[in-house]
Amino acid sequence: MIEVQDLSVRFGEAEALRRISLTLTPGERLGLVGESGSGKSMLGLALMGMLPEQAAMSGRLTIDAHDLSGAADREWREMRARKVAMIFQEPMMALNPLRRVGDTVMEPLRLHLGLSKSDARRRALELFEETGIQDPEEKLRQYPHELSGGQRQRVLIALALACDPGILIADEPTTALDAHVALRITDLLTRLARDRGMMLVFISHDLAAVARTAETVAVMYGGEIVEMGPVGQVLSDPKHPYTKGLLHARPTITGGELRKRLPMIPGNVPALADLPPGCRFSGRCAVELPHCAGTRPAIHAVGGSRSCACHRVPEVMDGAME
Image (cartoon, rainbow, N blue to C red; front, side, top):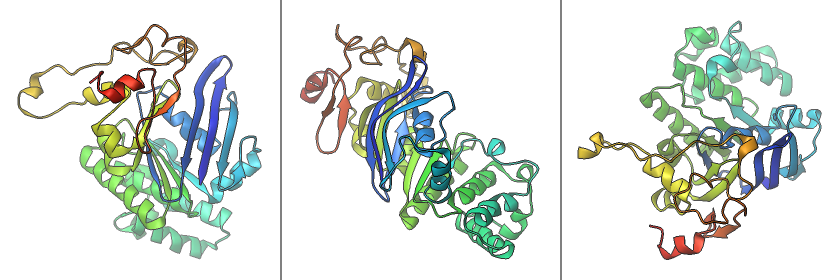
């Protein structure tokens, strides 16, 4: 289980994450969505204990009853060895171009599990087969540049699964892939999470991929979670103005819609040092109130397990903002 309470990450005066709170249970699949700069990857790095050295973290982070809020590097290395793993978005940057991919996957098996070379090779073959890599015997001997983008991503998934983690964080795992391959990767991650009972944190700009992969979605903006709930409910009936803006900006392929100009959220995500002290969406929101910029909105329950951080939640619930 992951429990995050009031987690904040600062770089000097700039606050990259502000008072994040969430709980993930074994087998749960969470999607994190939002524009670039919204804090999705930063939250993923915090859950991995891989924040940059300049970052100052406050709040509480607990994984399987281990309080890691002020954990030393040694504790985090042990946690990453057996409990939590990450798939990075660019396989060519994450894989060593001078090593055969089989050796890369075998390394943690030998280092953390103490397997012999032959046992590690056998286990690497099993992982390649589990992740759908064709001709695994041949692929073990190849270098990253000899594999396709989809095959490299599957190698990264096999590497992440090597020590049987309970938590898998996938940071934009389909960004560099074409649509067909991306679909197969999202289906693979969903199946692996179900079969292994893993927690999956799926970070993506792609709302369709999140809808296909996750059970719960958290919408992030300016380092905060502004809306959270079951993925089908949030994406079909958004409550926060930012979530509405993201959904309205999606392209469609029906009839005359092809020639229409896509709606846009005005402006850009401000730099960390320029975020307003109140609602961080202030300045871009079409329905903001005079006090939004200076007063941080509370997190309101909006039915069932859903929540929304907006000053106008009562009007949202009444349908006045539809």
